[in-house]
Amino acid sequence: MQFFFGGFFAFVLSTLRDSKVPNEFNFASLRDLIMQVDDLYRATKQTKRMIRSRLEQRDDGYQIVAKFFAARTEELSNTQLKLEQIRNAIRTRRDLFDETKETNS
Image (cartoon, rainbow, N blue to C red; front, side, top):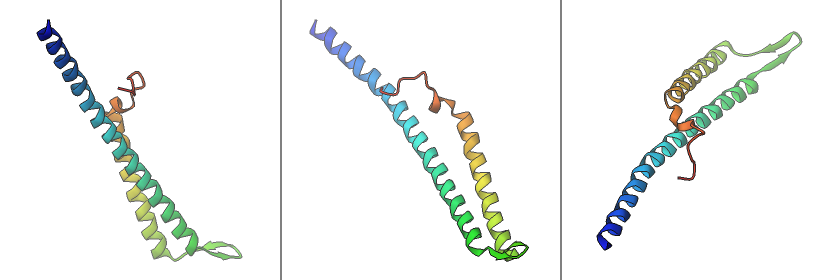
């Protein structure tokens, strides 16, 4: 009888451990994606602030130095490409956003 309970207890612990490892991996992956999106969002806001700070208001609208504007546009383009890569990663990792799974495992 003691052997049965010991074996059963070991089985339960093994099952919990095996299910916990993927959940921790998924959580770490999700946290990494969130951090990447957050960093890119902040970079975009910073670029927007930089452009706004260099705008010069004129009677007929706004003016900005072309080289500066081109460099900031390139930054925004690179940020967009990185966001698209993250979007593709999210599309391939639907398991990270599966609402049918228990989140309290």
